[in-house]
Length: 225
Length: 103
Image (cartoon, rainbow over all chains, first blue to last red; front, side, top):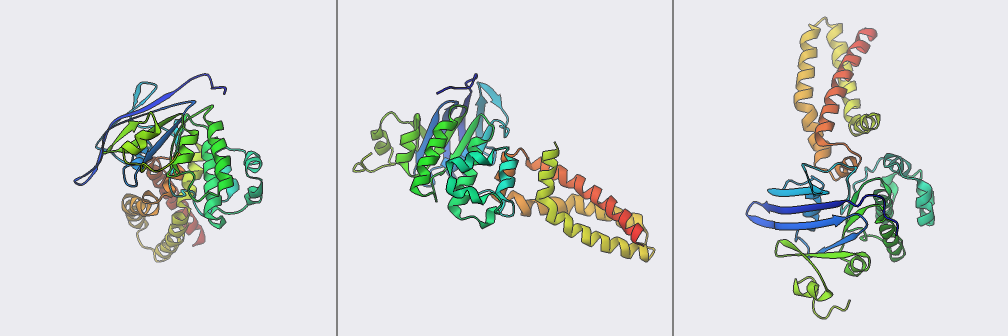
């Protein structure tokens, strides 16, 4: 793997988030490094998406400290971090061609990865199936220029063959980016992650072994990994 | 810069189209009836830019997941509000001139 000249580190620390009296996140710390894939697992409603949205400045936290290369940041720009949300964010009225142009990504590369989708170039996003929308969005987010990428449930709505292609694309993208990825298909996340965090008890734990996932209540003991 | 302007225009094109039609009708009526144009113009700009544009922006985009798409392309919420103010004022001036031309 050939990493680009600079290695960048993105850290988020002391995250406090609550909705009315419900405390969602408390004292959260997470680190993402270029050249690595960081996996994030956790139960439904434990705050994975909230944490990504806080990093993207799409959700206001009571407290949070973001540092890029150890320098405090008020917020991150699109050149620093891109975010793939859980549900499609692409406007329905624009064409696939336009989406690739917006993100300055070459469509021919997409055709090589997903040859059966090469006819989609002139179609509108609204005319694509949920899975097709997902692969277009994942591809442009992964290929667009940025230091970090956050992927929230990238494998949802995707057929098994495409999941393998997307995993390969994520691994390829880490040569130039730091990637934070969260999904409930935990085996896929474990496969591709260089470091794995699990969210529990309103905070984040760095896991050292698969047993940690059981200890923090994400998996049952009989789950085989 | 040009890319951001064209993106912002894409976000608000429906709003701008509707406003164009309404404003043209109002200005043609006002000019035709010799009503004090300055008063109508000022009221129109003030009300729309200060109230309608941000409210419409809020309902149109801020609550939608679509906003993430534009954020990924570098448009901020504040940037979008500034762009719609500028679009609105330019549009009003253009429509006023067109209305005079029509009459």
